[in-house]
Amino acid sequence: MEIDEPVGDFEPSIKALPSFPLPSLPDAPSKSVLALQGLDQALIDADVVHPSTILPIPDAEDDDGGTRLSAKIRKRLKSIGITELFAVQTSLLPFLLPHDPLARRLYLPYDPPRDVCISAPTGSGKTLAYVLPIVETLSPRIVTRLRALVVLPTRDLVSQVRETFEAITNNRGLKIGTATGQNSFAHEQAQLVNNVLPSKVDILICTPGRLMDHLMGTPNFSLQHLRFLVIDEADRLLAQSFQDWLSRVLAATRPHVKSSSSSSSPSPHSLPESDGLSPAFLQRLSLPDIPAFQHEEKETSCQKLLFSATLTRDPAKIAALNLRDPKYFIVQSRTDGEELHVLENYSMPPTLTHMIVSNSSKKPLVFFHLIHRQKMRNVLVFTKSADSTTRLVRLFEFFEEARLEKEPGTAGEESIIARAYSSDLPPSERKAILDQFKAQQIHILICSDLISRGIDITHVSHVVNYDVPVDMRKYVHRVGRTARAGRAGDAWTLVEEQEVCFSHSMRRLY
Ligand SMILES: Nc1ncnc2c1ncn2[C@@H]1O[C@H](COP(=O)(O)OP(=O)(O)OP(=O)(O)O)[C@@H](O)[C@H]1O
Image (cartoon, rainbow, N blue to C red; front, side, top):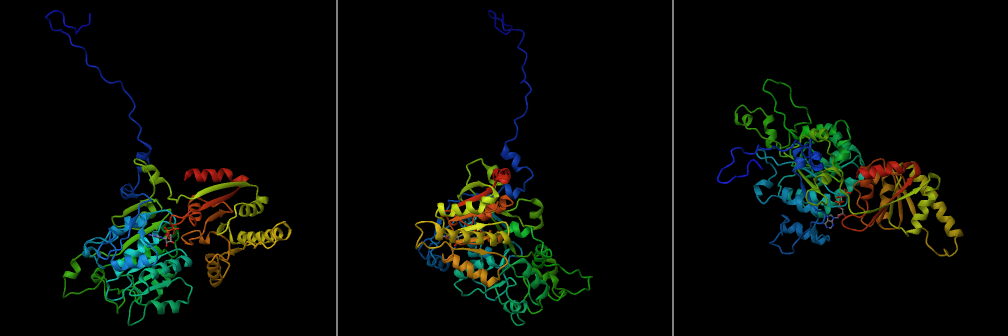
């Protein structure tokens, strides 16, 4: 008989003993939870945008369609063939161009703007994502001050970004300058400042080395009015020291209040006499008659915008930037609950990638065969150095000559033209070669990593990694020269037998 079973009218006198659950291990945290541990909260709170997101730009004058762009800029975009905003632009524009006109002011000393980090695939339109808000915000300015500084790793990228700014401003209104060291220092100084007009440009696009030269050696060159500091290809620039360029630039955007006991005067170039002072820099003046100046805390209005397809997640490097309440945007496809994927991997366009294994002595022939077999034109080829670039061009020309001479049925066929693009060439020749490649007079451009980042040549339909890139980051930027702005493209990697393991493990990490 069971002890708690009622017998007749009697209630059981003994109840069953309570039972306790058997001990068990707690559930292991999910991979995505583990991946988030130790990460910056801002990164965890990132807005993840799907790459296929677009926003049409309406034709009507009085309807911005949610783009937050003025009718003038929308008209300008249409005239250069841009009819919709890409994913990175749809998320960044509303953030940088708030509805409230007060929040779009040039100076926001009491309510400074949040900094922004953007990770989006190669060719996804990051340049316009910062050019448009900068032009919109600065256009109403009355006097010219240096208000937007765009830092890029190479001269080629500086001229490319300048072209984009010029296409949007249509060479009217805002003044755009560049500083890359391509012209003499005195010439650049004369373009940027003079004694009457402290700044002759509203927007400066530059490389970090030349920026440092001007910061230290150009009188009246000041960053006190900066409203935007853009660091494009941020991971590469953050890895470069250049006389500690980043901390010096950041220091130049911030006022350092002079202590009343200090008798030292500011350095000649840090506080231009003839320039009007920005509100935050007013704190540096000792004005005994107006004590309020010293008590009101004003922050610099400079908003930092960091862009890359391979944005660093290294907390130490990000901390060095001293970001203000940063907002992250990540353009990447994911399904719900795939945070791990989002946070651990690089953003890549849907480029088709292939791998061919060959031994090193046959590599030039395999490459030659690949070009002909696939009937490739508009090809960008990456080698490991300027030397290998020159060698490969010679070999290719030699094979091509032999083919046209000896192979039956090639009579009258046009030769395939390959050219080297390397740091050994003078800038004017490099530009001429790039222009010929853009005009499709050169079919194959063979280069080292010099143009693996940022360069936008729309018709590149194939990328060949003749030499395996040293890491995944380089791989992403190289193959990102094709399949840009939603176009088709493919990438090939020639892997030597002894590199197969390395190549596989590198791509598995991706
Ligand atoms: N909304 C748009 N509509 C059509 N084309 C666009 C749009 N936005 C950008 N593009 C074009 O897409 C191409 C790639 O843009 P961009 O060079 O800004 O890419 P990116 O994201 O900076 O790439 P990378 O990481 O390689 O530097 C350019 O030719 C640009 O003109």
